[in-house]
Image (cartoon, rainbow, N blue to C red; front, side):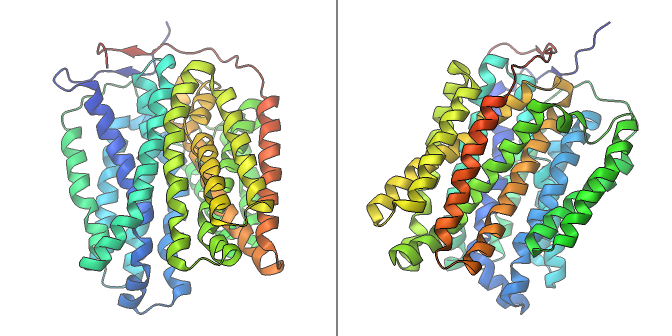
Length: 456
């Protein structure tokens, strides 16, 4: 007798689109917070009397715990259900926001940020898994692409909202604004009924501990530029392999790293994170040093990139369903390649900069959007959806951490560091195109999805 691992039942009084909206609202909240804290950083440092070097831990601690929570939360939804883990993620995010807003010390503030990050880890992969469980394969590209669109919108509005709050209110409202959004999401979730066959196997406690230690060591090593910590993380990874092979329900599927397609797709996600972060984070500084723009003008350069990324996510999601994820992903990396080459050798005026970042934005919007999600799902069993999407997000986070770190080292070593940074992006993009071409045709048998509600 075959099992049906994903069974979705939605309360008949609640349209499927409202369920979809509820999950996307969680994505928007997480994306908004991703950019809203930046304008408040100096105010936070001043409030707690900490130096800038300590203040950046507002972001660092968030990055670390977000990376750790993604694969763990993605795995736990198999045991406790998507709705339960998503609700937990939203609740933790709200609790972390309140703690950060009213923290009596900087240490407590950082604990609040860590709780926020853990909560976010229960939002992103679960939303993708919900889409997979709800919509048939021919529609998944479209709906998965909306994640990129909503994330882009939140990322654009984040710094704008943060600037307005700092100008008119106390910095604590940067975090308090999350609470009403979380309440709205939790209220909507009470109207949603999701029936899901959960896994009744022992929790891989040892695997979760080793995975957490591995990710923390590698991520912290990258951030601190500490080779010893990175080496420790790699050693822990190899220690984890035999343990996970014996686990009844492992938190890390070893076959993701032994099968060509899944390994290559994870590496493509790593590359997409590197290209995205090194472009977005360095663009204002590049504009200042290369073109002589002032700080206000240089910051505006990120806006057309973000807008073009959102448009690309929309276009990419439609094309995935029509011509296939692989072709769309190739187009995304080709556009990124053109952008990287232009940033390295062509840009010498505001006009060429704007044209270049628009092209680059289209490329980034595609490579971090629907295609990779669809491709990883084509190469795994449906019951592994949460875990697979979680690892895809984890590798993108690793790339996003590596990009600015390596770029910072290059800028301190070379006089013309920006050219070398974008040459690295060019090489990485070419390598990514070769990886895509080397992917084998998918041969994983698909499990059947039962949607108990008609229509969309």
